Length: 111
Image 1 (tube, one colour):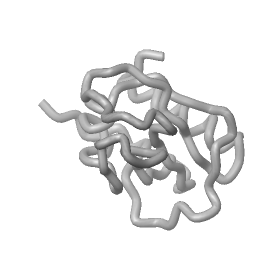
Image 2 (cartoon, one colour):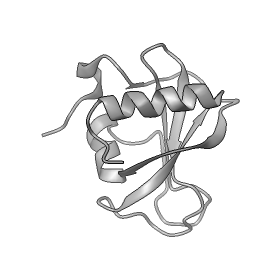
Image 3 (cartoon, one colour):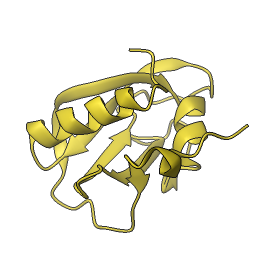
Image 4 (tube, one colour):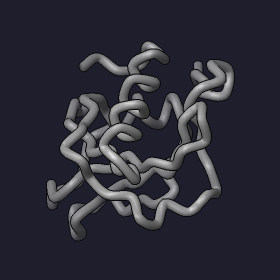
């Protein structure tokens, strides 16, 4: 059963540009499988470990603020059920924290 993020009225995928977002030392502990369950396939995926990132989601908060969720410098393929600290990229640390809080509010992320 796929859990759809749209039902919660919170975070959703977006076509808005993520230009200017960056990492503010805020992560979310989850798995690629849980991210897929909540948001579908990532906007960018090359899960072979050959680049700095394997996956990159472009999402927006309930307020419409754009942020990204991505792995960073694992340099190896990521397993679907592997629990990792994924980076949250946003325009400010406050927006990154809001994104993390909303993802926790969805009840899909363990840490």
